[in-house]
Image (cartoon, rainbow, N blue to C red; front, top):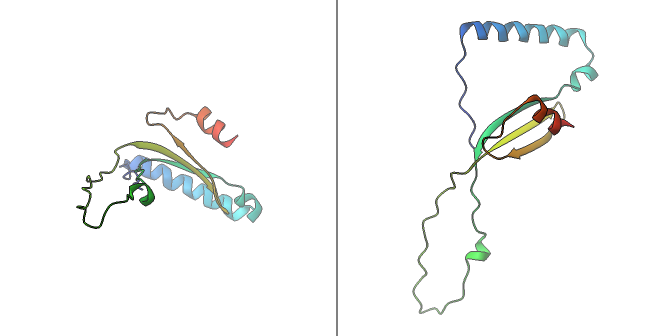
Length: 114
């Protein structure tokens, strides 16, 4: 499975992330473990997939003297799908696969989490 490359962010965006992380760490100091365990996070990425035929489907009966069958070169499918995953402190909660060009909105996330 291939993930996306990290996006380049500006110095201002980096500062904002540092500020938000500091706020989150302050929250961690003042909250109980149960509150922190209730946090759910998510991510999305585009993945390539390949659906090869099982070996049983490739088997055939032939005589020992028969020439070996010619095999076509297997190429990976260039089909991409969007994988959206959510997890908490216990592990993965949900993995969803959507067609390429799916618009990701707040409604999309809300319907997944519902």
